[in-house]
Length: 410
Image 1 (tube, rainbow, N blue to C red):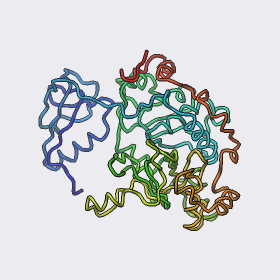
Image 2: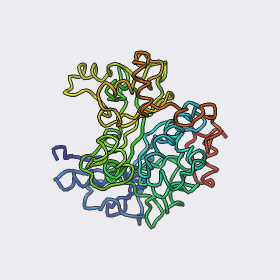
Image 3: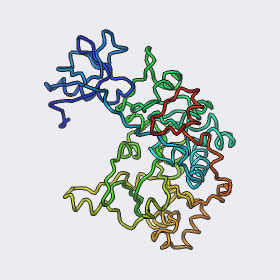
Image 4: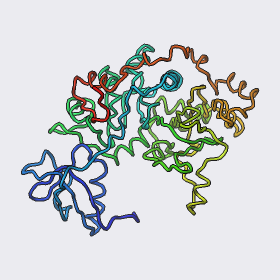
């Protein structure tokens, strides 16, 4: 309301002679930005890749646009959501197995959002294999608010996925998206019209679960990707990874989580917000810490608040290679802290756990190890992945997925 643009500089795929714009599959939130600018007396300038006599569709009408400029070369799009299956480790496979069996299956999660990363890519690639063997097809992961992850192709082709509403597109996925209009939201011309504003709203209110990773987590469950010397953007995580108290429509997953958090007579449900991390990240930096770097960053930036990505009171579960901590079942701050320490591995935070209290939490099902879930870590191998290379993803797509050159090694 108080951030209305005076000038909007936007990129479009094409313009016609009148100035109507076609944005292509990466429509995202551009129409909303343009509308806010144009209807408050602002100026809208559009850079376009080409001029056409007839557009495939009109995403922004000409009377909202003041100027169009033909670009000397097409605008660059970074493949943000592409993860090479060849880089998925067996530790990530183990964590994905625990997440599927210990969270997805137990809550019956059908409407969800995945954050970006190899951890969630592993889950996507285990759906046609491990999850199918558990009899979960049609019971989990049917409706998504998600960018078109290439690693979701095998699950789509295996009949796991019924619908994907996208924030934006992904490089190389357009032909596949067009061919699977039964799954993606495409127009009569065959191209997708993504909508970031709608997907963010769906991710907040409609999704029963968000699962993603982070760089640091403290003993209250607060997490952040802003660390000393490295400030990584939060993306949609603060929105996706929050429990909206305005939600009123019920679902089995939402109700089960609410009853675990608030008791059997709870009058509201609870969104599942899962943080999935290995206990150490690159250069052996521990993910679990006594204090987030966010507090030092707040001081150095002179900010009013520390840059926390997801607040701890929104986090429902933590998944590491050591197991799952179900924070919904914790009844005191002390239990919550020990549950987090109980899956923090050999980090200093994990080594400082109260062993007796963690074992008590394990007896109550708050902390669960792979063996508690009936999972043999020795079976967590890359053989379980439905695709073990980008080339495998191309095969699954019937040759429709065209990965960027940097992901091609054939």
